[in-house]
Image (cartoon, rainbow, N blue to C red):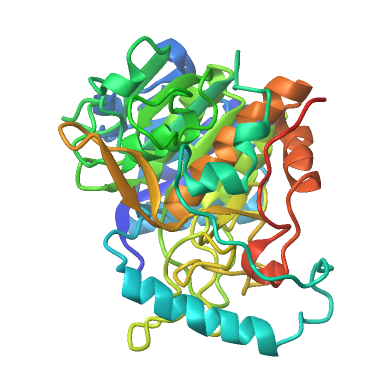
Length: 432
């Protein structure tokens, strides 16, 4: 696997003395042009500034994105080793929207038969989450509401996300989609030459699941937090790709605007043995400290290309979801079995699956004129968790790590290894 990079670098600066870190960066590289997000409205860089040869500093996150040649990069590494003004450096990576389109019914049935066979023959591994008494697995189907909303008990919850800001960082949103008419929507594009208007579909689908309407013009209902305030950040292009600088710009914008939840159905593959990014780990910490929980897709690289079944072991949680302070989401099918593509907990130093959500054959919004589409992926599981997090934020007033704790406390335990599904299936809050 080749890691795709942009030629720029991410540099972690000390949040207690950002000025000293910026000065150390200038001294090590000779770069004098430094733009700071704090100098822009909403801490939101323009796309021109993100693409400039200057260093771009995200003040709330304490991260700089800098174009460096190899000698300059080595100077920064030496500075990081010599003092605490520069904490870490890594190449900026290319990331992609995470989704699986076109999974056939025969394919899914074949996978389900195989997973059921394993379920019947293999006892849970010692040390995994305690299982409930074994019963026949349920099978949810779309009806008045999607199977995902049924399985997560969203329909029984009295909460709607009222007063909660939810940021979805993705390919944007179809701003003309009739299902979002009248909603409070803030939007910003961090992709050069492209507006927030979604010409890909992935972002519109994810926003639909997280924040779609209660009374859908056409059944089934598909949206969780139907009264949440939507922040649509375009950090992936209409082709479905982007880079760390756009993601960090979106996170900075969302944190600055007080978004309690930041949903990211994007990433890049990792390999067994890969460590998590210390920069995203610190970004996650700083976001949590500011009251923003980042929820990210675990990745879709675990289907065996020959058999169509799930690899044993699966591939590890992808980047950047493998940072421990980002909540990594696995995908389940409508029988609450782990999806064949869903990545798992493999790397002890590379993050783990934290929770699971519905991620196979998920019906949600799609750019007009299609209006709706059913697709699969950990991308589809992630906005289920994000929307339900908004319900908990409304119900409890919790933010940051406290909100994380509510989600994991109330998750439904499953008769599956925690390495595949984390704590279990996310569940909506009932009356508090």
